[in-house]
Each structure stands twice: as C-alpha cells, then as structure tokens.
Length: 155
Image (cartoon, rainbow, N blue to C red; front, top):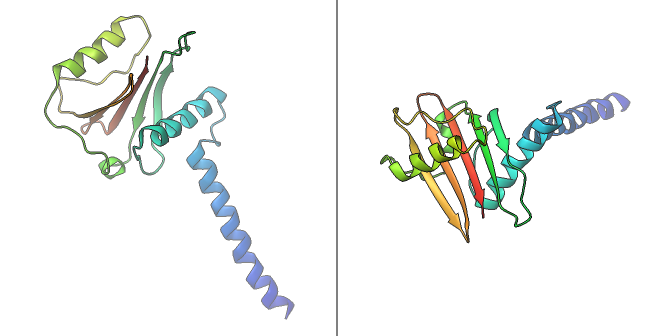
C-alpha cells in the first residue's frame, strides 16, 4: 500500500516541479541580472497591453528603456531573437516596405538615445504599427535574422 502511495505522489511532485520551472523561465525569473529581469517582465507587459502574442521564450538580445518624464512620455526598445517564425504567426504583419516607419526608427537612433541594434532596412522585413490614444507600438520582424524589434512610444 505504501509503495502505491509513493508511486502516485512522485509523479505529482514531478509535474509541480516542471510547472514551476516553466513558469520561472516564461517570466524571466532565471535571469540573474535585475535589469534583464525587468526587461523580460516589460516585454510580457507590452504583449498583454497591446494584445500581441509572442509564443515561447524569445531570447532578449538588446533593450533600452528611457526614463519617464514628468508628463509620462517614454520609449521602450527591445530586440528579441526568435527560435522560428511560428512564434509570431498570430501577429498580422505588413509586407510592403514603409519609409515613414524606417524614418521613425532612424530618427530614434540619431536622437542620442543609444539604440545600437537597429533593423537592417536594406533587407526584407515585415512590420506592424499599433496606435492607442497617443501611444504607438512599432513591431518589425527580420526573417533573415529571426529578430523581432519592438518600439513602444508613449506620449
């Protein structure tokens, strides 16, 4: 009787342990750098707020979060490395190149805000811009590099 009880309890604890590990990986809790943990949590918050879905756990390559001014305006920039294109299949992206979008990104880099890892606009890319009130979210995906660029601008 005790053997059956033990054989029943071990898989349950195993499932609980595996669930905790997946949760911690999903939320970025395994990251030891507090800034990187904050960046992962911010990416998840952006996904929730803007109703976009990035499946799996993309690798955070670079990020820049500007300080919020007294008016509440700020910018958040993230570069994510995807494992495959299927991670963003639920996001409807535009395939036609957009010079206004390119100029917005180029302007952000030239304004001294320190965005080092910008998309290569000479290569093929897909994009989406979402506006809500006075805020905007730019999403650019480079299929050659499997990189996803997120730029959230709050005014």
